[in-house]
Length: 331
Length: 282
Image (tube, rainbow over all chains, first blue to last red; front, side, top):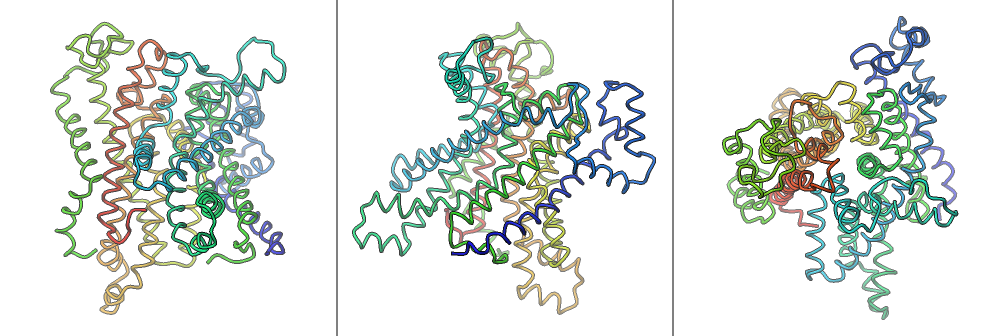
């Protein structure tokens, strides 16, 4: 085992994060510079949401009379101290706003991911063990359709069917307003509100994972170690679950890293549809009120979240696959 | 992919079921976008009939009307034109940026490649839809900003593909031969490597169009569409308030998006299979 190499790997991987964060900051700064009006107009929100005195103070603080590199350094300094500025529309620091909304988004994302992984694996294994059957064909149609359906529209149609039509599930929000609850009832209430948005967000990834698991299972069925297991008399179930599926999980973990960014993008739309009080809903409110600084803050913060998730997935990969050599360089 | 493979390409495409299906769907949508304005000549923004008329209730407005009494058929036709146009132009932008980055990185390698790939990675790290939202919001919603924003967030996949192609092709004999007879770098890239690197880029661009159309719909659904242009996302966004009473207002344009995206996905997959006969379907 290569556990010995774990610490240098973590350190090197952490060090690699620095240029990415720098790049994200530079991108944000570039957008600020290119925006119509000067930086402070953007930062303070439009249409005089801030007082003129504050604008003048902000201009001086930001050093708009100084050369661009100095301004950029100043901006970097702000970001490094997690100072994302102030939202005049909502009258709160941007970081505080984001932090109050982050848990809801993380809950939605992890639930959606869990549903996608579990259901996607089931579908993929099912299709792989019955290649060419009606179940396999049905899965390929499901994948095809799911790739084409816009998530937000799927959510709207789910509301039409399950909330307005059948009345089974709440159409939006995270809690039932005004109901007094015990802790247990409250968890149940949130879970009930979570079902539709989480399933909606998960559908696309479910299709991706189902396809991925199906193809890697099929590849693995031809592998030598599967043949050996079969020769030793292992049952089909044991071969499928213990030998093939376990190995099919690895590409899924890789995919996870690729998709954290897209999952966050999807959350913005799903939260808007279901009034889920997370980052995405906050972004929608920021669009509505043209609160550009808040929007930029959300962009920066969500990028940082993606970087951190990728870091975690890399670590996870080293931990679950002993063949990955953390000390090795890129092949 | 040599020139002699060209006659076979159309044949391979026509026997490929997904490519053929995609082409047929796409032809239908194109026909709708082109002759639709003749069938439903009204301004999609104008009140044409009583509001919330259900589809089929009055054949003058076959697909019904929305909450403002605007004809949905006219709206869908307008949406088809907007979606196809924005999808196509933003993909051209994405393909342009992606090809430039990928070609330079793949051809020169070394530090040029390292820098360009860092930038590509950066754009893959930032949640692309959030970036598109920020770009459109900062530069005011319009068709031009939507096209630019979608183009700017959609190029990294193309860049990686072109880079991989260039890495393979630059070592091939015909490129070395070109270099030996004294071709300059621009000529080598443009006339020798690029034409051979393009087929998979075209297949991928078809998929990029599909994604761009979805992104456009999502942007205008959030209210970030051009305020003067009726697109599918605009209709869906406008119909949200009456979702329970008149779901078809959201439903129909959504189906239009699904069909269009499906058409491009099928076509792209078919192109991929036809252009890479070695790669059997996974």
